[in-house]
Length: 405
Ligand SMILES: C[S@@+](CC[C@H](N)C(=O)[O-])C[C@H]1O[C@@H](n2cnc3c(N)ncnc32)[C@H](O)[C@@H]1O
Image (tube, rainbow, N blue to C red; front, top):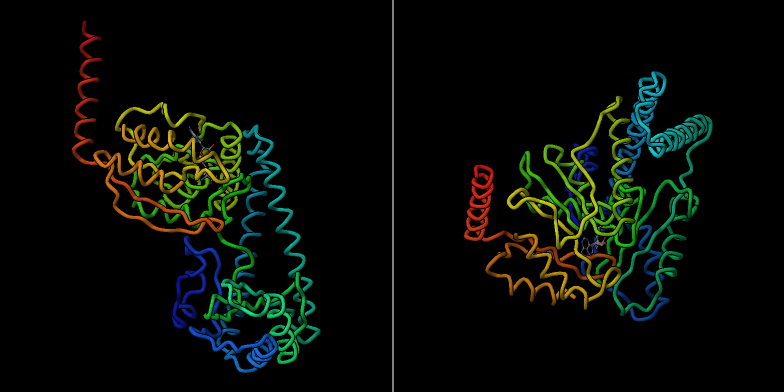
């Protein structure tokens, strides 16, 4: 969880929304590091009821309001961009250059959705003029830890009921204005108001696969590698392409290659690239001819790439849980590491065995759907790089000599 100070928030709501490694944004109403839970369920739930009236709601609600108006403005800007794009492109038939029907379909879906939401907003604003605002709200309880004598539903019900009485807001589980969060982790409680409607980790991906990586996590992995302009960045096991797609969006001055041995995965990655292109055309308001990204089908053990032609490899290997198997990983991991140089335990052991080739610089632990996964930042040993470059130089020299002869 990243924390932003109160002053920073008031100064730059839009800046906070631009953070790329954040899944969800919320404003904290109050944080209890060591909440004094009572013994019985009845007592705890009674305390939750009383808590609603004791919380400092005023500033967090101001932040929520600023955020809501910012989101409305952003939506209107997007609608304008979309209509400008339609006028500039569809009307002048520039899109006829595209043979890909998926792109055309995507555009009409995006435009259709936005126009519908624009209509809702107009209806809402005319309502606002005639009626005093009664906010609709819901409470969401996220609870982790085993020693609680109450369920999440019970906490939601009693805390939510007290909020309703306190503010005279209307409870609505689906069409709400305010989402109050009650995050309970062992003895720690954080009460907040959500500022994002859906997780930001789903940006850029329209075609999901069985193990699609969160875009926020893909961003973090790429950032660890500190890409430089003109770098060639490869994800040799790209699945739906979450890593290279995030790369093409955020590091558009590099070239990104997405590869996978499964044709279904390559197809999904290609579709995601198509959607990204459409999105960037809408944003720019004009047709652009491509993005610095490509998708290919290949086997990691036999990459069609010249030695020394890649600057960075970022990949999310199969863990052997939802994809592949631990047994297969015993062969796959060493083969991958070997090809890339020229169960977690398995990877760590493989890495240890390859200590002469790869040097582990950094390990970051992340949570992927409840699995404890490691992100390793590896550097190839300089000595080996010299040997490889030397070898390559000799090969090239050999080729030239052959050509001469
Ligand atoms: C954990 S998934 C990657 C998920 C991906 N990051 C995403 O966002 O969808 C691992 C991928 O490795 C691919 N894979 C497994 N063995 C491979 C091989 N020998 N060569 C290339 N890709 C392989 C699988 O098809 C799978 O898509």
